[in-house]
Length: 408
Image (cartoon, rainbow, N blue to C red; front, side):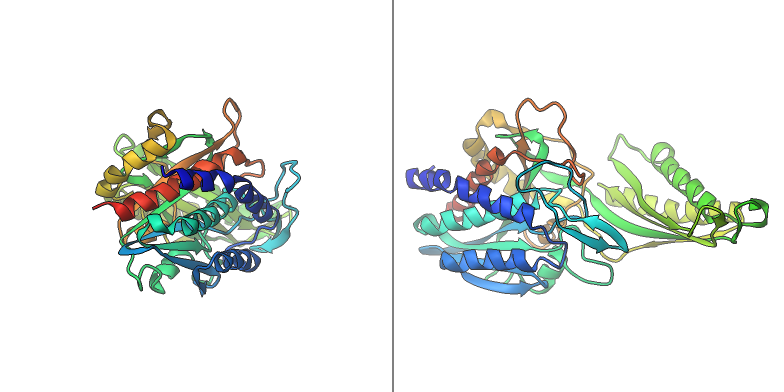
């Protein structure tokens, strides 16, 4: 690594940490990242970048032209938070509250997007100071709504692509990272081809017959039917799917039904996700879910309709050639022993929409304090990452950019 580049990366660490703390304390939900976007914009303009705002509602794009013409590389960070109430006792703990899907909740960066945003702001400043090392152009993409736009709205990477974020100038490759609360600081994890699953969101509407809670025999209980459907869906995974080939996960994450304890309601509604890593398996499971839902409801005297939503995430697919080409950079940056090959993960990422258009590499960055035996998962109130992990994020994205642009 260039000596001055290394010096600039080391010097910016505290700035990156401070930015991350600010965003963590001031989280904003998908398509509502107004103040987050404002702070990003102010920083990018202050360091002299060409800046585009209002991309896919609240997205921000910065453009840095190197001293020489050449290829174009994009770097992406997601900027939205989650409807989660934080339990951590931190000086920069989130106290923000809101109403989400008719439920009072806190707002928290419970997936590390605050770190991603701060890291990319740091990379932008470092590369701007060292643009003499760049034979080409860099696009810094700060993307809203990675967690999905609110119901009835568009957003996220898909909308950014539709609005032309990978054009003018045309992007040749894109890099992104995700900090992990369960991967030790100083570690990078990667996988060629499919690294994260496709995710299909669904709604199941169950219709029965209401009655007094004391006389269930005069009802068709939609809550009971919902329970049977949930149980039945899991048998598709455990008894009908060849799990030695690829993983499949069906999760029902929300059930809504009824008004009080002694009334059997007429309807219930369930929201969930299907996660797959193989196209043919995805199609088969979706068909069986439809059959299972309607058949079980009919067996208990009711009806049910399963609908898959239009906004679904494809497989996060790392281009094999790009991954092979850039792997030496990751190993040289983190240390050969600190770069590990992993199995595919059943989480989903809308970075996949960028990868459908141009070759992309997406990897995981260690954010767990070494020796921690009880790291909390992402999307939970106790999620926490170690600030010490972010410097490698700045270093790796910076060096990937330079090496890609300078490669013949």
